[in-house]
Amino acid sequence: MAKKVTLVYFSSTKTTKKNLLAMAEGMGCPFETVDFTLPASRERDVCFGEGDFVIFGSPVYGGVMPLLVREYLEKHISGNNTPCAIVAVYGNRHFDDCLVEMEDLLTEKGFLVTAAAACLGEHSYTTQIATGRPDESDLAWAKEFGQKLQEKLTGPVQALEKGVIPGNRPYKERKPSAPMAPVNTNGCIHCGNCVRNCPVGAIDAKDPGKADPEKCIKCLSCVRLCPLGSKAFTAEGFQASVAWCLANFKEPRKEPVAFL
Ligand SMILES: Cc1cc2nc3c(=O)[nH]c(=O)nc-3n(C[C@H](O)[C@H](O)[C@H](O)COP(=O)(O)O)c2cc1C
Ligand code: SF4
Ligand code: SF4
Image 1: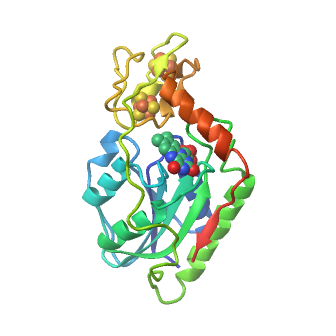
Image 2: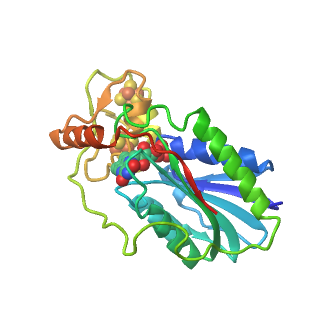
């Protein structure tokens, strides 16, 4: 039984968070969370020891970790032979090299990667891809994965052999995307939801209709949270990406996979 379980994740549209919470439920022991989605939560250092067990969760952006996830883990998280599981959550296209990138980085940071999972989340860009996921069956799967993690911890703790987790090295290149930001299409009641929940502080607190295209990571949190449904990415380039995703990745439904 793990002595202390901590979930460490970035999750702007909450699908990574939902998958990890179901895993913790499956582990059946008390747990803590380090949710580093918002800027204020990315300032402190967090160190883990041998008695800890950590589940790291990251969404897949362009086949790898979002750059800010990589930078946060590099700068603020460390382990000391700490066993962990790594979880990549993707929107029905592919997780590509995200898990191997997590494996390499966390190994460098002092963790023993004992298990990995690629899970599904509704695609941030459109509610029409991986709609409603993680759904009931995904969450039951995640719970079972948590039970398997707990079983693993009853034996000697070992890192997975290199090659068990699929992905390419070098990883997919992070290509700079055209600066873009959402606009307000239907007014604003100044509730501040979008401002408070933007992971990079890109939205103007005084005028939430304005967002900084140089800062925006296109996570779609603000679009999902606006009570008026006012926020949208109207740029042609964004619409073209959504159309491409819809044409290619809506079907077939992909299922979560474990690497143990
Ligand atoms: C900028 C960006 C890039 C993405 N790239 C991929 C991708 O390469 N493959 C994929 O299947 N899903 C991709 N997605 C979808 C997310 O991985 C997916 O929706 C995930 O569930 C979001 O996690 P969150 O809800 O925890 O933020 C991308 C989403 C965004 C915002
Ligand atoms: S402005 Fe950009 S980064 Fe901020 S919540 Fe909206 S989509 Fe995400
Ligand atoms: S969430 Fe919508 S209504 Fe609220 S401040 Fe942002 S744009 Fe305005």
